[in-house]
Length: 434
Image (tube, rainbow, N blue to C red):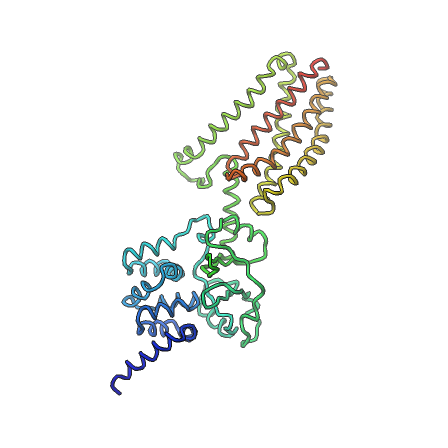
């Protein structure tokens, strides 16, 4: 019948225009090639509307199946954010090929949208996440998962018509469910999620909790963008720990064992210069008591003992506080509580260490006065060092600075100055007993 194909096309377009959500549900049930063929027969704005309303995984598979002739016009009809979200789900080679087909201005905009810094959740995620409607059945989900090949899946994520994350189903629960069971009945509460620009530390905190095998990543509207899989969670945790270790001793987190010498020098030297300045500050404290040291040379022998013990005490408190801040176990509001704990710990440990130290000094010098000065200064310096170890990273956090970057240098200065000042100060006051 003449004009029948045109009539069918008009009826299809009318149906899509009137019932876009229902049309999208029908299209997503088709094989990717069939869905792509249907979209290619529609006007680009209508095809883009269907693609936008499909779950991200199905939409990306359909996009990959579109011909090179039809794809650019359909992608151009999408919002750039939606286009970037769908293109980012493709394999890297396919994604580059598709972007190259776009208008240069649109290609640049989409590429910029797909780029996330490496230290945020978006930079850690795998955008190739398979999503399902809550009304889909276990049979439908399993059939589609089998077609994904070797892609590792721990959880199945459910999204609504707008692509917003509504739930998650573990693969084990899905495999054990009756074929006709709807996925929404298998979902267990509101899944843990992070936003694309959340810092890596937030992802590490979730990984450390041990409650999830994968973490969904969403945008500000709670639309699902991707998933951070278990292996990437472990890698992020290891990288965060190694970066903190390097930063705490004045080494750039970007430096590697095989980095160029010029890069290492450029990153390390400024911190060494700062450390030199603080060392002169500690030395100036010793200089204040030059006459006391000249009169009682045994004090010079014992100075490293006091500084070493207070330094170790401060480092212990610093390590515990830094870990608490990194894992979000504590906040700045816990400052008084943490400081109080370290005061008690420093006092008790100080008394225990001071008793042994004073006994050793007495046996070595046969001077009860020197032993008493050593014991009192040891307690005082260890208490202050413990409080400083907890306070320095908290103070840097309040000031908006990275506590891992300068805590170690500041703490070393505090413990050295306090250790020297208390020991030599008490020795000067009690010089008649030495």
